[in-house]
Length: 206
Image (tube, rainbow, N blue to C red; front, side, top):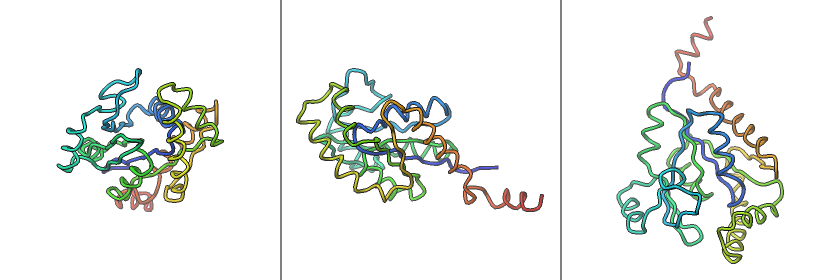
């Protein structure tokens, strides 16, 4: 019954909230869900692969994309640049695929400006102190960098009310948060206004 463009889901929240783990878990449940890979100027972490986790680009290449309108949103975060390539998202939605992305909080709000129908989901830990534990467990940043991320996280929490949903990622129980994310995707698919008029008329007259 549902036809037309796909839906854009934006999962965001403070660094260390578990965006990567939960989105990966969600994609295992929904293989047809397309993932939007962001571009960044930061160096890759040991386990990250170009084109899968991020497009790792130079500052010059990033600036070229931004100048030519090739980014749906972009932000500087903790000294690095992050952005969402526009063409992949527009093509996927037009083809009818649902797309999920996980930008920083400011980036998520910028996406909402470009795509008002985007569904914004704010991801938080069950306790703020867990953010520090998760960042330390990565072993990829200095104490000063972690402290800066926690300062940014406190500011990002102030934007929760501008999102459509909130999901709590409880420590050691990520599967519960994955189920919550999946429930949101399912519910959004069943909203009346997403069905074409002729489909609703068929239901009314059946």
